[in-house]
Amino acid sequence: MIAYKQKKTKKKRVLSTGQLSTDVTTSEMGLKSINSNAILDPDYIKELVHDIRKFSHMLLYLKEAILSECFKEVIHIRLDELLRVLKSVMSKHQNLNSVDLQNAAEMLTTKVKAVNFTEVNEENKNDLFREVFSSIETLAFTFGNILTNFLMGDVGNDSLLRLPVSQESKSFESVSVESVDSSSEKGNFSPIELDSMLLKNTNSVELALSYAKTWSKYTKNIVSWVEKKLNLELESTRNIVKLAEATRTNIGLQEFMPLQSLFTNALLNDIENSHLLQQTIAALQANKFVQPLLGRKNEMEKQRKEIKELWKQEQNKMLETETALKKAKLLCMQRQDEYEKAKSSMFRAEEEHLSSSSGLVKNLNRQLEKKRRLEEEALQKVEEANELYKVCVTNVEERRNDLENTKREILAQLRKLVFQCDLTLKAVSNFFSILKRKKKVCTSVDIQTV
Image (cartoon, rainbow, N blue to C red):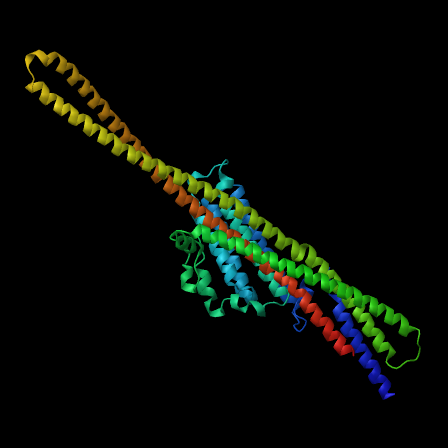
């Protein structure tokens, strides 16, 4: 009797474990996907959801303030409210405290400060606030990414990205409309400092484009590996399902065998776990890993090629302007030589005219007049060449300034692009870790079942 009760208890424990592994489906990956060893207080979950909604509303209010009134004071008030809410959320939920979130908030504040509100009108509003909207999206994406890490139990893996509790108040106090603290104090470079450093490098655009190209190749290799791995995993789960179903059918025909119910439950666990893994693999192949990463890679390649072509055109324009300047300088030297020759010829003609006899005066007067006309024409050509040279110098200066501004814009665009791509890569990597974690759960269930 005692043995029967122990067997029955063991069976219930196995069924409970199996139920735990099958309750978490792909469509329910939210709060249920938190580390299975941690039990979160329902009141804490409600508080977290409330804070997330409040932060989301603050982001929406800031966007509405920009799109509607577009008054500097209103926008700054909304930004301050957003930063206060974000500070409160990070202080209350330490697992959401991250350097990435700090940097995204600082970038948004910097972009808002950079807007010249006196120039804003209905026609140029979208252009002037394009970078602000991009920073808002980056902040929202970063917050969602960190929240995903927390809800999926990946907080420990991101410990290097989290700010120490002792530094939280000090670091976040610096993020306000009035002042943006230098990131170098935290061991990082702010976007402005990074762009300034790159601008000093002659080949910075080429280096940035080279990194973007390498990122695309790197992502392509990762996607290829993941696709092949997922296909192998999918094929494996299908084979396991076939094997388990066939075995379950066979042993079901044999009654009163030892541990029959235990092995039947183990086979059911194999089938259910395999179906769960198939759902996860399908999600990773679709919108959880492969497609988002391929989308980012394609966008990176598209913008990289456009930027490369734009930079090449700007460099060609600069080269043409410098070539025109060199030609104008050579022309000035040539015209000056011609003028010197004409001037010297005029000087000799005047000397001959003074020393000539009275019978040759009429002929010498005609020659002197001709040489004087040639000298005046040569002088006029010198003046025209000098004017052309001055214009070319001005064009070179303007073109150099345009090239520097284009370089600054390209570097900022590439930095933002790489930042967005890195965020996407990190986000999809979190989803990819689901497969490993579920495989570990399934393996643990099988071991406990046996």
